[in-house]
Amino acid sequence: MKILVLGAGRMGLGAAFDLVHNSPGVEVVTIADFDLAKAQDVVAKVGTSKIEAKHVDASNYDEIVALMRGHDSAISCVNYWYNESLSKAAIETGTNFCDLGGNNYVVDSQLALDAEAKAAGINIIPDCGLAPGMVSILAMHGAANFDRLDEVHIRVGGLPQDPQPPLNYQLVFSVEGLINEYVEVARVIRDGKIMEVDSMTEIEDLSFYGFPPLEAFQTSGGTSTLPDTFLGKIRELDYKTIRYAGHCEKFKTMIDLGLCSSEEMVVDYAKVTPRKVFGDLLQKHLPADGPDYVLVRLEFVGDKNGETKTLRYDIVDKEDESTGLSAMMRTTAFPASIIAQMMASGDVLEHGATPQEKAIDPNRFVAELARRNINIIETAF
Image (cartoon, rainbow, N blue to C red; front, side, top):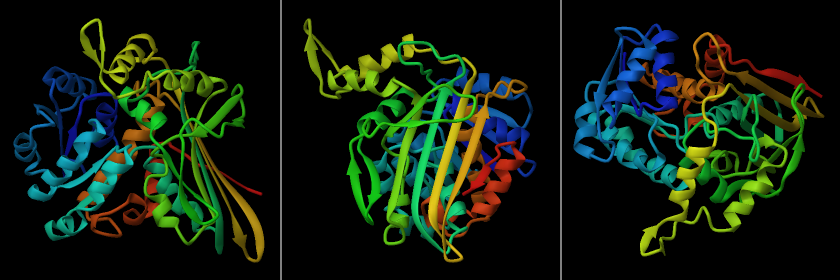
């Protein structure tokens, strides 16, 4: 199969590495970016003749269409605002498509293309990274262990192994994606109804063995389409982001001061957008290259054989020193690569523009994670 990766940043590198080194069914990989040198750098790091670099402007529809032709699947590792037009290009070219998502409104616009995707004989599966993404499929995997499921609670975070004040955080993916998660509303199920909750609220203490004090708080996008999938089936569903204790209060102060506002303002006769300036400052001052952890926890509460049971899934992943891939690259880009290959081989449960939890067999997916040494620790109590 022939797979296209759009975007040669961290996640593009992670996806390309998995496609080349962990995926015997993949014959050719194309890595494309506006900055050709970045794409060529990915080729050099991946280091095989199976991958080639191309230039592309993700905002140029005709360029995207020309590049997509001839590929079995495409993975978008570019910013979420391109994904609707990329989905339309995938339909035009008959190319299966998945992305790393992160914005509920964009995902809704992609899923509205279901009829067109079915007519083209392809899959469009948004939100295929870590969270949103992998955790949605794990939610379906865990749900299958109950006769009646009542609650699903999802906690996920990328953490530096060597946290540095004041935020004790390092940039492990797009800064725009981070800000989006922190300022948009979160979708949850409460008392059986879908509700919207402000991000950066409802802080709770959390513990993982061997880690210092942690916290988790509401953020946007992590539940993706799960509220719609589980509506009428469970009573409670929520998603919170994990950080080292104290992070939320500090970052929320900056949000409250307007530093994440997208409203243009004039400063000394120059037009500026606080969100853009703040994002640039985060990129300048936050560390980005240190070793990291990814923590994942899903807790399920429901009935099994007439008794109320709780099932916990934990994943603790860390940077792979042998490959240089961060934990966030492994747990975000590898799932997208797995899904792209499943689409290309026709190994999906549904066709069209479909949420990943409906299109992907959770048992097959979990087996592919394990083959990449991303392992789930199960605890029942």
